[in-house]
Image (cartoon, rainbow over all chains, first blue to last red; front, side, top):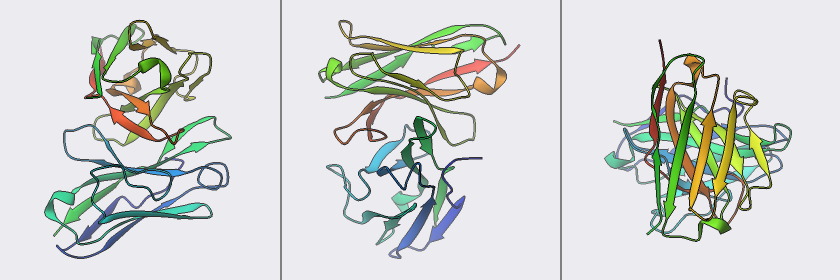
Length: 110
Length: 120
């Protein structure tokens, strides 16, 4: 059971906008920034969004992040086939004194 | 170019030990905090351990506390994970990850991972 809660799966058709939610608590998302990772099959995770809503250089602006209270969300607009991957949210947990990840959301492009 | 290259994985029996290494290049290693993150077969990401840039601050996940030891050698640009009393549930790909400018869980670069299999 992951500390951060994500839906196990999501799907959309090319061009659609797909949101992925991440729910936590006051000790993690509620008091720290949220980061999002994309993991393509057989590869290492890649930082997609940091500090709740910032994109690293090279990440398309189709990817956006937001945070409100103890929840965060990743949105992928203009869905493309290459977006098919697993997506993970992460935050520091002040009570556990450690990083916590969501269980991951497998995105399927129909 | 930033590179992180893990090594040291392999097959080990339950109760055994293994030492993982992560060789860093392309950046000033001594200025960055580092982490180990693992992923069991078919499972999600699990944070394992954190070490500050100087090595003075260390944190562990409860699942490995007392069995794993993280360390670093800034002169050798290397990060290590000593894993003792290994269990079947420690079977995973182990990644080293650098903490980026915004800190905490901003893991901006990852290695390719090294597979640890604990089995008799």
